[in-house]
Every structure is written in C-alpha cells, then in structure tokens.
Image (cartoon, rainbow, N blue to C red; front, side):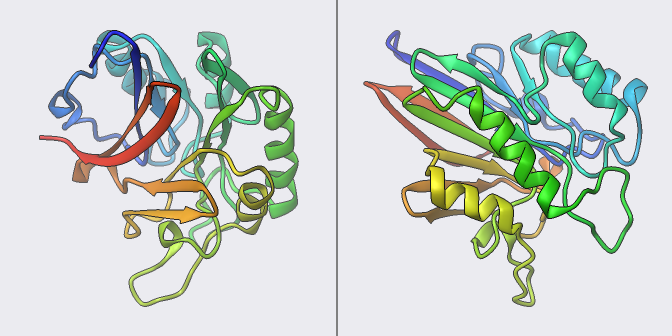
Length: 224
C-alpha cells in the first residue's frame, strides 16, 4: 500500500472459526479490522472475547458488532473495549465514517439476537446521526438489504431486510459490508452503494476497503 492510502479489512460470520485469519495478507498493517457479526455460535461474552483477542493480537484497531447468533451481552464488552459500531457511527479517516447495524430480523432458527424490522430502522438512523456530517460512509449491516444479491438464497427467494434497503436508498453510503446469508457471496450495487457479502469466514471471503486519492472503494477478496 502507498503512503497516501488507507485500507481496512472486513469480514463476518466467523462462527467461532478463525482458522484462516493468518491467511489474510497485511492484516497487521491494515488501518483497522471490521467484523460484521456472528462472532460466535450462540455464545456470550466469554467465548466472543477469546475470539476477538486473537484478532486484537494481530491488529488492535477493531470495529465490531454482534450478529443474530451472538448474545446481546457481547455489546457491553465491545463498548468497554471501544470496538462497538452497532447503532453508532465513528470516524475511520478524515471525511470517512463507519456505522453498524447488528442483530437480525426473526429467523426460523430462533437465534439469540433477533428484533423487529422497526427496531433495526431505529438503530440505523441512530447510528447515522453520528456520521451524517462526513462525506463518505461505510455501512456495516449484518442483515443484508432486501432485493440484493447479498440476500438471495440458492433457490431464488430473497430474504433481505427492508429497513436496510430503505436506508441505503435514502442515504447512499459508499459501501455496505454485510453477511448473515452464507450462501449469498456477492458484489452488487444499490444505486451508487456497493454491497458486498463475503460469506462465512471459514470459506475464506473478506472485503478490502481502500481510501486512495480521496476515493473510497471495496472489493471481495479470498484468504490464502
């Protein structure tokens, strides 16, 4: 990476498997590591902290949130460490913001952190208040936007989130890093917003986000 360039590496749906972490090039040199949710398989703070400490030892600049498979108590731990992005926004670099939306709408599996679509919409606008003054924006939404490739099941049904879709349509963040639907690994666009779902981390997918010459871009990458 050139000296005038910043970059961040993002992934999610860890599900307690970080075996490919060492296969991500320049993880230690990145300006930050972004984790979109589902750190655990239905566990709490103790398990999540063990996993995140592995990441921290390589790169201490963490931006993280829970997914539907994580217990809500983990958010308090993320707050204590200064890592939480759920329902809040932070500045990544000059003029560049990041905001997060964890949890998910109800699933058939009755996972630990499921809420209504209306609650997700409230959290989106709550987080946006922190970063709406910044010119560029990365949205980290565990639940993918409805209608996008990131939310399409193999047999064709789209199970995306309408609150996330409406937010993207209105705000048009530069990038949406998402996940949740493991089978929907993809790059897509909603207007000018690039939507990327790297899938389960154990399959090697992650996202490279780059800021270079005042341009913010992202692309799907694979570890190894």
